[in-house]
Image (tube, rainbow, N blue to C red):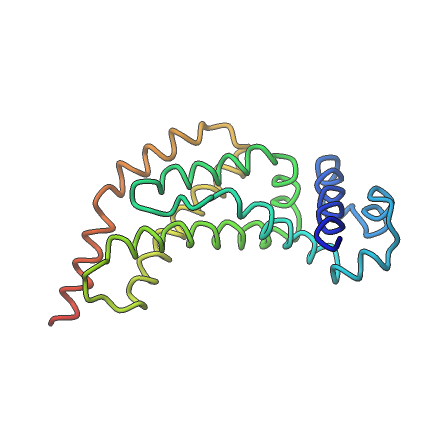
Length: 188
């Protein structure tokens, strides 16, 4: 029952965010739309921001769907773009509010999960510290999310496939090169 209630509250928040910015939505608006009382809301969430975070972490995480290998990273990244596009108003109203960091944290988390899977796969059999693998994943994570945030800021007009194709051209083979450089630095 708890998961059903959370999903219903999330659906109400998404519906309201399609109509107006987050800072114009109250808990009362959400519970009225969801037809539950305030105690029910506060039983599940501390505040609207807690609900917003839950939406991004629990609903949007499905976007990757295990696409975090070297052969599938482009598809995984495309799924993140697709989630953002299919939830356009929700994302834009989050992006244009004081709670933009919830969106950014979601993007950073999902992109890191995608990239660390690729890096772990490419690093098999290599002697590389986990901190170095994390560094490489974080480097690419910030680049990817920066591109996506810029795409969101510009109204999501550019085709995500175009962006991903250019990313592929830019980084093709670079993860392996970076891993080899870190492996060589360990030997020195």
